[in-house]
Image (tube, rainbow over all chains, first blue to last red; front, side, top):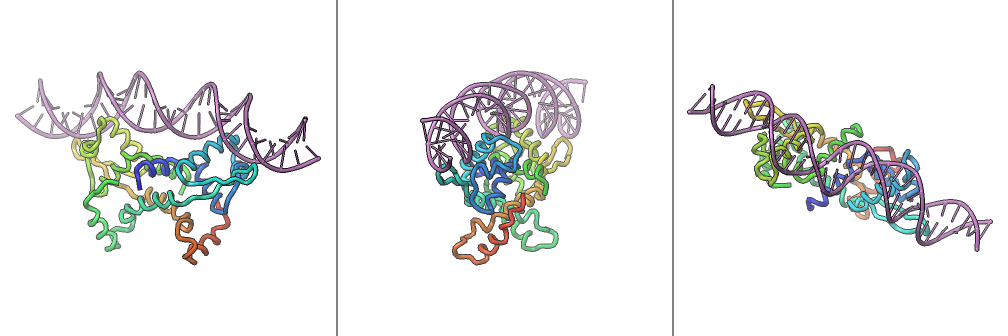
Length: 113
Length: 113
DNA sequence: TGGTTATATAAACAATTGGTTATGTGAGTG
DNA sequence: CACTCACATAACCAATTGTTTATATAACCA
């Protein structure tokens, strides 16, 4: 779970167009043209977004003739989720959950990332 | 769970300095000087990072004389986690878990974000 | 009052980002 | 072959980001 991976993943997720592309890919593979269709944006712009997602490992691409189908790759999303899990006890209702309080105390050793 | 909130949250998390600051705040409140200490970076740089975190709602700030103690605010982290949860079935071992497969089929309706 | 400590603000900067238009490439189709 | 369709690349642009140095503000201390 390297810092650079998290950098790229969170940066990729910080854009609504890219999040919408990932949401679309939940339904299965899609070509660049299909992914571009819903947006009021040129095709090269979408290609750039796809490159960001690919560099972050969030999608991978195949080849089907002239199409370059994109598919969701969830491993990087898992890393991001794992990082965020380290904070779960801070939004769990800490005044009602003993478990959360214990977790919080246990994490008092402030290890980095 | 607005798009702008997620934009600001993920963008804030996309920097290792800011993630380390949040990690430090798990241990409790800290002043700007305390937060700046571990980094090879000037104080104004840290102040800027804190402003990014504050605008994203990830921290809040009090006043204690001349100190401006920072405290972790986890609500925005919860929103980010909630968004990521929508992808959990894609990294769960889909060939061994019936539950994940069912979730995946259920999500075939590709609703946006 | 004067000096130090904690933090903020301003101005400058290079690098990155998110978009554009224009053009290239390469696979399919008449 | 000529044409179109799917996608990539290049060059450019304005805006944002992450950092710096220098300076201001405001609280505490002697």
